[in-house]
Length: 113
Image (cartoon, rainbow, N blue to C red):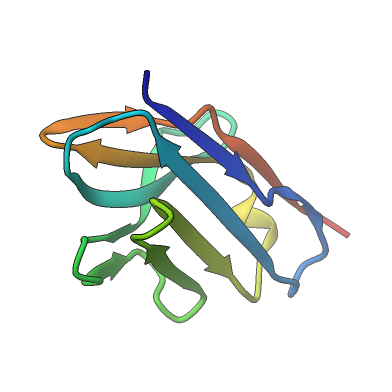
């Protein structure tokens, strides 16, 4: 059974930083792209960042958000800097084993003073 376990969310002041982690396990298929989406209250889910197995990345805001991965640990990270109140959302990681995408349950990030 595939599991994605996220951690690192919480409350942070504007201008602060957080690092999210997501560890994937439970599949014998090749782990392909991993990434993060987020969903703010009343809004649609939106892409934050994607990373390929070779480390190629695509980020919605590369100046503030950096995605990385540890292939040995099947773990993806999201370093978020200079956080703004509008970054408040539930952040969901995903992992693609073979051609199937699996999702984590989400971790809440709240940016507030």
